[in-house]
Every structure is written in C-alpha cells, then in structure tokens.
Image (cartoon, rainbow, N blue to C red; front, side, top):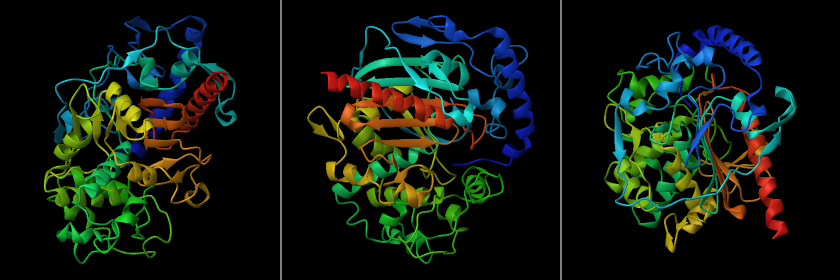
Length: 439
C-alpha cells in the first residue's frame, strides 16, 4: 500500500511499546476468561474503550494521540488517523441514499473458536482472546444478511469511517465493471491512453486495461514498504504537494521489465492509472459514479469518502473510508452474486472474472491467487478477499453467504498477525459449512 519514511524510524519504538504492552497484558490477566471481557454490549454491539498493546497506542493522560498529515502513518497515531483519514487529507464524498438497507441482527453471538497459527505462538483461541491479542478497531461477521458479531475496540464505534487501504483497489475494479457494462469503456483490451489521453506516450498509457486490472502491466514498480521504495514515491506524489496530481503522479514510473500480461507484480500505481481511466471514461468523479452505481444501491447508511490528489483525482489504490456496517453491506452484495434483492448491481459476468484467479497462488507467491484487483483463496471454492495493509480485510464466501469485515491498526505493513485473521476466518467458514451440511 503506502507508507512514508516514518515506518523505519518508528520500528524500534514500536517494538519497545509492543514488549511493554505484552507485559502489561500478562499482568492484567486473560480477558477471555470473562464472558464479554472488556466489552460492554448495547443492542448487540460490543464496544471497548481500550484494546491490546495500549502502551503503544494510548497517551499518558488517556485517550489516543491526535494525528496530522506528518505523523498519521506512525503506529502511535493510527487509532486516530485510520478512523478520520478523510479529515487529515483532501477527500471526495460518495453520498448515501435516503434509506439504509436493513441488516438483521442475531439474538446472540455464536460461539467462535479457532487454532492460532504455530508460527505466531499456536494455541486454541476464542473470539475474546483474538480481540485481546490483535489490534482490531472493528470486527463484523454477517451471514445471509444477519449480523452475527459486531465489535469495536479503542473507543471506535459505528459512526467512525474506517480506512480501507488497498481494499479500495477492488472497489475500483468493481466500478470499472459497471462502466464497461454501460459502454463508457468499450473493451478492457483497449490501452489506458485510449480513455486517459494524458497517459499517451507512457508505458502505462500503452498498457491494456486488462493487464492493469490483474497487476501484470510489466511496468517496473517496487512496493516493499521500506519508506524509500516506489510506493513511498507514489504516496509523496499523491499527498506531499510535490506534483500537481494526475498523470504527474505516475509518470515517474515509466520503464518496463516485462511485456503486458507476462507476469504478476503488485503495484499500487496500476490502480491509480485505472482510477484515471475510470474518471475520464465516465466523465465524472469516481466518487460520484461509485455512489450512484454501487453505494446508494447497496443501501449504505452513511456517506463514504475517497482520498484525492491535488488535481482532485481519486487515487484509487487506497483511501476509501466507510463505516463498518457499510463495508458489511458491500460484502453482502458481493456474497449474493453482485445483487441486492432483484437488482444486479455488479454485472454477474464481470464479478465472475473479478473473483477468479487470473494468476495462481503459485504465480503470485503470496498465498493467494489474483483476479481483477482481488485476492483469491487458493482452495478455489469461490471465496475471495479485499485486503489492505496493516489489517484491513473484507472476506467473502458466496457459497455460505458469509462475510467478515476486519479493520485494524497493526503496527507495520509486514505484521504477521494477518495470518491469525485468516485462521479466524477459515474456522468460521468451517463452522458454517458444518451447519449447512447438517441442514
């Protein structure tokens, strides 16, 4: 995703804070031993004013550090920044509709347990213990339109717009599918410069849209979160004020290491190019088109926002913000084959292409296959994921009509705790597979 130079400078302090927090947690005892633990419940919603590793996130006087445009990426400030990034940076708005789509709520939370991966300690954990060990700001599990779990930590709640990071990439791909169906984009075999003329003469401009969708443009781009890689340059060009925005953001990445379609290589810049193509193809801001075609039709209860560069272009590769229940509504729509009721929101054929592995897990080398800006579970059972750095996740299993939304403040881009989130999800999937067989 993205990350200023602050990541490296904060590593030692983060490690010290993590060690101290673990010691404090051990002294405080295991909250999993108490039903509900730190959480208070009202109308089925569980909320906690604190969370794990408070020494890392909290202030000496209580509460959470106030973030700004200079320190927002640093772990100590992320509880605040990851829930109001659209106030710290410029953003466009996707307006909600007049009425929210109701989500039913289960009478009580189901009992959930999972096996923690051995490389991060192992053990058989409850949901309470997961939340005591992982810095999740929000967690929601929905099956067949019914909320099974809705929890918040670190004094976050249903009104906070939580950031997506790279989950936004999948939203760009879904919106692109609507634009193709409506004829704004004639073919994804067309080159990007066909719709974004400012890209003419660049390697990205010469790349077919299809290969941008599958992260296989062949344009050289390094994204390894060192603070001095290409994604850091992309970030500075988007938000640092060094460029006027638009094509200037990606013109700096203009050398080719492979022909389009030959190899998979993750690059946030490719989604920025897709966002440029989308905006110019439909002749409207991405936020407006997305709101009309997807956000209002799914019955979102709150406005969503998209971070923009200095030109007003939605960057697309990150920076979508929404409340937790609206992420869940998006997941419910996807689990229902792109439909809400009898209305097809995402064209069925496009959704099928988006959520199949154009590149296998072996080709990708990250434990997932890759579709159109979407991560595909290697079991190839129809389930897939929208993933964002530092713990942002939307898992979708259409076969079980099951959705899990997870937002977090993991301290680094390479935090191993993501494997624990996957383990939790796979256990929930297994639990509802057994229920389906029993019925």
